[in-house]
Image 1 (cartoon, rainbow over the protein chains, first blue to last red):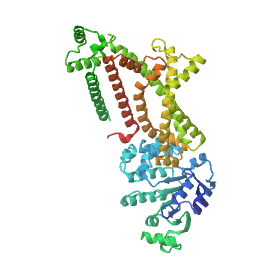
Image 2: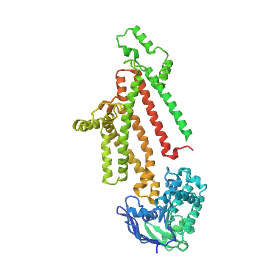
Image 3: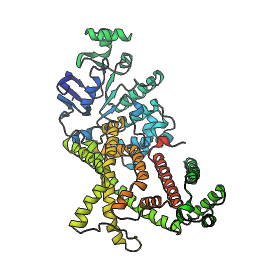
Length: 253
Length: 314
């Protein structure tokens, strides 16, 4: 059964369309890239899937997760899926964590919230998750506050939160864009291992084609609010059919 | 942590010392001879000299300062040149009244501002949020004494539920004390609460659009719990700043309410002392007020570091 089926998704801001006619599907365990220039509607599409569109924006069409329709679903139902079955990693790690809460507690909260662990197990597993995303001295870091961590370390913490409940689908919105290149590669490693171990599906948003080539099996190309091309990563990147994709490739080579 | 606190205490003590110097020096250089003021214009030079000697005003300023501060540290603020009564006991009584009034008033303000400000922020796009905003705007515009008069009209004159003024010390009759405190505290709290509501609203609005609230939502927290668990503590920092300022201003500012409700507070005492040119009393009151403000700032400062781990030096 298809894990995520987006059909004719559109997003408007008070009448003016931002995203139109977006349709795609993700199978369980599949790793899909969503590429395009900034402003092409990638992040909005991801936010619509999460049901976390900014205020003032509305989505229409259909977003099916398993056999459940997410568009128009109640907050209660959505919040049960969020953080458990569908999780998300955002672009900016510096501000993604609560500055006044210890890191370990923020990781444990994800498990306590969905009752996937009891209190003691959650604290213990929080440290283990921090270790699995290859943070040094995880026990000490669990007791640290976010400002005591570097950007790369914070993004690992966010990733640990996103992986805590073994999600069926992980959405990453340019998770490495704000980080420097050496850190990027290591985060991607941890990310790829994380989804592989859990057999989670991945929707990976980026404008970095090299990253897509290493992480994703299939790729969707977005331009001006529409999907203009899709197919196996290798095929799209070596023999683009759409003129926009060709330009995107040219620009990045 | 303990080291940082120790440093802050040192700064507090140094500030109090400097403040006492400034207060003393300022009143010493003011024109006007306290003995002359006390005795009136027709006093003979001999009588003036004798009175100066009696008050110790003929000694060098340094000696006078040390003598005064030495007394203050043991709770002895000297004897008023005008009333010839000890200043210290009265000062402490008055301070007690003002502290109860301001404390109760700010408690009312907080109880109003925390929920209303949060509601106004969470529902800022809805009519109910806008209504709370408008109401707080109105509250800011109402002077506290007017609120006091209206409250007296309703609850004391019409309904007769509560006394219209006067002060009963809590040790004498706790029930009467509380009944007497309710209306003044409400008058103060309603207006300050309206001011504070606006700051709480802004702080919560700011926090709501923070990335970590979005992270909390993506973890599966619903909007309101996300705000409460991850937002309120962070929103408390700017609110605390305003709260500290309000407290400091009210120590003297509550004088208006003290007058409306005939409460023997510190502000009234200060005004009376100024009117009677009772310089030593003014000096004592001003010092107490300065120290109180310094302590409020110290506590606010300490609370910052409790609320925000980024401000802690490790």
